[in-house]
Image (cartoon, rainbow, N blue to C red):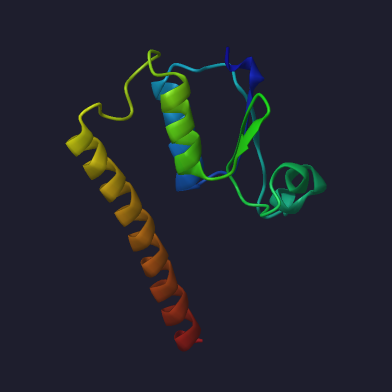
Length: 125
């Protein structure tokens, strides 16, 4: 089942871990995976460009479907494999709405924190 899945990932990346955890929670073992080196710029390679024009990781491929956003990959896995492994999303509409709220709050918080860190680091130099 997982043989038609491929994950390109980098070490130390929470978005990559997110997809790996979702695959594990859905009991989807045996998928193809390749760790790419950011230091060696492997994420900028032609191989990655062909499947992800943004050249960012993770890249998750399931059959002909290519997803390069970790949340999209997780949502896809939950929807495609609802009956397999652990449930990743609640059935209750109110709980599902709260899950989406927390997910997007997390994205916004991460983006704002990253901007702040970058701004602070440039003013210190």
